[in-house]
Image (cartoon, rainbow, N blue to C red):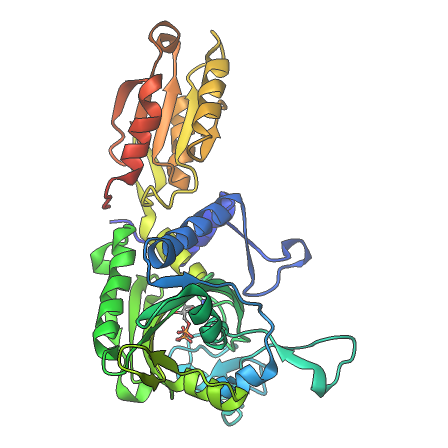
Length: 446
Ligand code: ATP
């Protein structure tokens, strides 16, 4: 069994252009990451899979894309201005900062073998509440009247648009509104690569239901969200649902369960599914003076819907898919790193290789690559030995390789190599599009 460490993942991600440190040439900006050519393809596939499953494949969920800056009253109503805080402790000696609720896992900055406070030199402050929202100013005047916040979650954009979507989409309860986009949190202890950053992308859906039907829908979404990760190839033994204890629940939540993944740092939250009750719509009604209740035509009742919220992170999910796919084994007598992605997530679906740079093989291969590009993401590679070229594609998780050789000129066939079984078979060029399409849509398990 390969031991997957965060270092191995970060190294591969950097070496192959999945991610780069932000502003690297200036020494980097801590906990901010840029996605390179393969990283953006992978993350887009993750987001597309989420959007397809949550919005496009259903008739009871609508999409929305709200602005990042919102009216400051939104954050008063939601409780973020007052309560979106973490308890912060400073060490006056080494200037390190810790989250008071994570002291058990924290290390002293001077003596990493000790916990903060255990070393003689440590001079810790009392815990104080630190608001995680980033502030900025709207317009040219930097004064408190023009303060706005970078949204710390995408959910509030959905709540404040509840009536807009309801009246324009002709949906009825139960129905949902989904949004993907950037959120910002001035985390006290960011780190562990993409796991916790200060700028990240969320994939959130608010599902509005009749009070009394909330528990059934909460169960439904907990199972559905776990299944989504399984369906995209995450192994069962690395996934679990962890219900929150009563004392962990946010002030607005009646129940909450985390989908947890066994990251190299241990079991940690991948996504949270919360029963937010009618807290948000009630508060926004109160603060805005607009009646956000739903009118049920059948029963002639007007009520505040309850909300079930599956809230996932696109970057954290991308990290989980990278970690779960990582493998090392022997191929054709050499050790190789391979990313065993579900083919739907692989940045490149098909690699096309001319076996040799002669007999018109490159020209034939480029023609095939151009044709396939109309259907799939394709990489054309003619550099180095064929073994090396296979290795390069295995390392970025390309599920299929096509080799154009001497025989192609005589019978219009090519060899198709499978990343996982490493089996090769000969296929007519004319059969490639249907064959690859069918293989890419088959259920897949590692
Ligand atoms: P945590 O307990 O890890 O801080 P949270 O419970 O505050 O997370 P939520 O507010 O429920 O997180 O956000 C939903 C999802 O957004 C999380 O499950 C995670 O995938 C993602 N997320 C939240 N904070 C970050 C972050 N700082 N960096 C990357 N992803 C994040």
